[in-house]
Image (cartoon, rainbow, N blue to C red; front, side):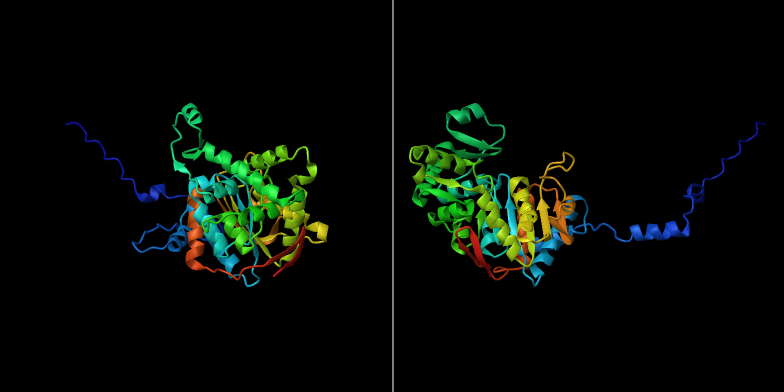
Length: 370
């Protein structure tokens, strides 16, 4: 009779136990594993603020959105009432964010606007009765050009109406007369010529919220001002020009006159750097300080070393963000991230969120900020 094979010994869980940790390692492990990721649950009656706060317990960019909201909470609850600078870049009006930005201004959530020229121009374009239209990134762009339609990713605008709005910006400059002025003063004057309560530029003028556009030449407003220059070329005394260094001088006075400051950066670009440089320029007035609060939503990468994606921690090395400041960043495209964070602010701090600041100007001098 053949011998029966011996059964293989049963493997037990103990055979696969990890090597034991030292007591110090065990304590460190417990510390690191003390907070589980929260699995979000969407309730039928959930407010935007509830959703954003719940996202803080999640991971990846959802958590970063929640952390940005927490910075906003501390900023709006600060009894010292920081002056809030809103930096705007990217195709925000084309994306459909005009009303969100307008409500941030009207509701008292921001005090100073620093924007690309394209955003303010497209707001003016709509204030004059024209629209952005839904298109497709797969469009026949040669055909669009023949039809005088311009494309911004999946959005169309009317090139004929752009031409008309360009020249309107130049004609408004005619009314200011000759000499240099700041983008703030010129944009404020543009706002006085609009009659659209849904307009960002109109509301900034009406409410006394300073608008700065440090790269105004790089926009359709700049094209309109070039047309103005061309018509007044032979009579320099009647020609208006934007003095970009006066912009610097006006902006830094706001920084040096406020007790605390905060920054909301939507995308990056020139507006982000300009708001940050206003802090650096404070040494002109014998001050050294940084923003006490800051958030940024962007899709720019950090690895290329560019300003748009540079972290707010990096800004601390320049003194642009205070040592001990509250700040957060979320790498989420602004057409998604800005409505979430604005909705959080609107829910938790109903308008008017704060008492409005009054800026009193005498030419290029900020007489008072109260």
